[in-house]
Amino acid sequence: MPLRVRVCTVADVAAGELRAFRVHGVTWPVIVTIVDGAFVAVPGVCPHEDVALWEGDLDGGEIVCPGHGWGFDVRTGRCKSAPGLELRRYAITLVGDEIWVDLL
Ligand code: FES
Image 1 (tube, rainbow, N blue to C red):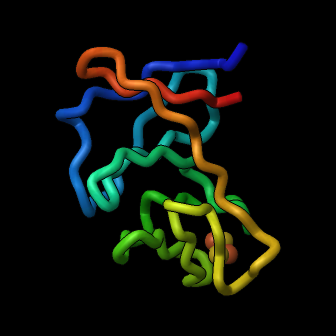
Image 2 (image 1 turned 45 degrees about the horizontal axis):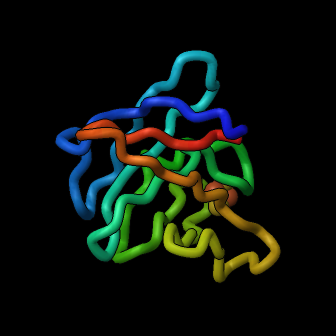
Image 3 (image 1 turned 30 degrees about the vertical axis):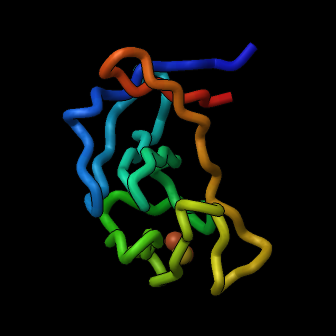
């Protein structure tokens, strides 16, 4: 059974923008955005080092980390600069106008 938490509403999210939402009991906020017309949710921390990803830029479908400038494709989680490194993607469930994500 997944650990599913409510993160935000559909109205809180905008295409092309990184928005981060605090979730009770979770250290780093969850980033939710819209890429290619689909909601995407990822952790708010870079998988390389502990850097706030929401302070980076969203360039097309890539989050560019403010730490070292590496890009993470939110559609796949892949990083071209470090192929072994992957940004986790959370499964999303829409409940009415609420966005819930599976943290585990
Ligand atoms: S801390 Fe994000 S790429 Fe290095």
